[in-house]
Length: 372
Ligand SMILES: NC(=O)c1ccc[n+]([C@@H]2O[C@H](COP(=O)([O-])OP(=O)(O)OC[C@H]3O[C@@H](n4cnc5c(N)ncnc54)[C@H](O)[C@@H]3O)[C@@H](O)[C@H]2O)c1
Image (cartoon, rainbow, N blue to C red):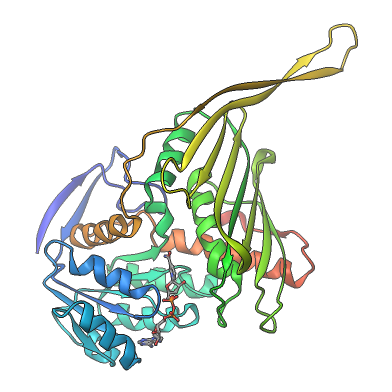
């Protein structure tokens, strides 16, 4: 093992991309020769594809109970190793890291086993099913000096990163509100409701864009097909300074929708992730408040309808960016952008949403200690 000086990396950071820091951090160069993917259902094969093509990865081990899934993966990627037994993954000295892509209610148990076995661990979203579980994972990873990453894929998508850049540069002015819709017909899950499945993406995007935690969260939803597993939900996140975000998620919609509107005090932005190109549009539209000088205290509003700008965005597969980032973080021993703390924050918002759901949409506070 070789010590390297990472001048400027946010090794201890719990949020944000690796921005320049004044503190020089010493991290350890580690091996990343082999990786295992546990869970080869709908999503796991995307990880297999990316790691099979990743530079420097000599060994890809794929694990699933299902023989059918293992056979499918082996037929697509003949060079990977397949196993039904996770112990084989955990005892393999050439496997340095594991991606957990199993159903959400198994994340904690499997991630604990990976960390205990000394493997760097990336857990698909959401990190765990409770804040307590997420905290245990964070502590274990820290004590063992292992990388723990949350699979917040959209934080690695080029349009989302462009939006973050636009907000950061002040282009939109102050963000006033966000409205995000993520809907489709299916895929129904039994272990978690639609908020834990789909809103995880929107929450991670919103927290990253605003750089802060909500003060309180309310949520309403309904289950129509599986008892107490809501298939449609609407979350409201209240932030400081009257900033508000709405998230509508549904497994019961005739159309695939991934649409986010961000209204700023200067400009407004629309992000349509289903658009084949030009996913982000910035509208020079807004409202100006003019005082009436003859009637003290009164005012009138004028509306601005300016140009629409479509920023140039270099598209890349978010999962590839995420995959490369994980490998880089493991090798350099640095904290990922979507680290365990980032996963914990999303889980805390989802927990508050659950409490609100059970209380007919009453707003639930978020502990101040978690603010970013
Ligand atoms: N980041 C994204 O955009 C994104 C998209 C879809 C799903 N996901 C996440 O990926 C994960 C998996 O979702 P999915 O849709 O692929 O689920 P899925 O039900 O289609 O597949 C899960 C697979 O895990 C296997 N499995 C379960 N327990 C196992 C164990 N202990 N050992 C080995 N294999 C086991 C099952 O046999 C199954 O093949 C979830 O956490 C989900 O939230 C992320």
